[in-house]
Length: 218
Image 1: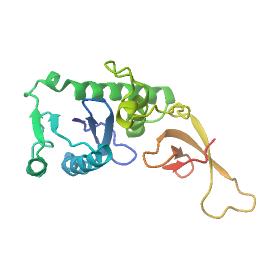
Image 2: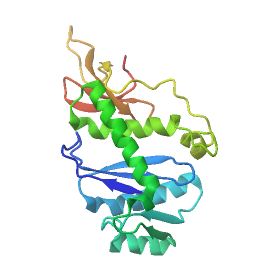
Image 3: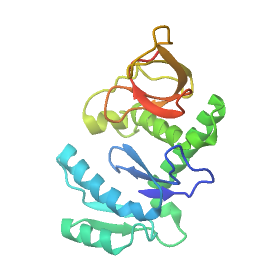
């Protein structure tokens, strides 16, 4: 795992850091966005409990750098209670944490290309990183197994027919509130990602200026 930031521009959700966690076997990745580094410990504790419940396997080893966000009393106590071994890369030797460093670079470069192609402002960097992670988990091939990280983690082939170009224009059906008699039934916006908790798209509504989740898009 590794943390990058702070970014020059805060995201739409007022985040400045991104925590990237990669499973060493499947290469499946997760991204979490933070306001400050202090949030890292609680996010990691929640992540470990959730992933152990989903996979029916125990987290045995954590490999990271020697940043204070990973070396603190909260995480030390939690890992000690869970019997989790800690492995740290040597100071100023990022190549010892190569899997996490390469994943960071891949996500950042992908997000940069997506933002440049879509012409969206840099405040959408978190949405671009999240979308890049979502897609790469489903399309990149892990060479030793000739399978995607998604297939190795969930034991089923991912369906990718619903994937769309980041930043493409969308028409969003208005499904809340009372519409005027002759008012428009839809808003215009831009596609900025996929929901992690439901079968829906994340879209930026140009009228309300907020990111919302909806399946009623065209």
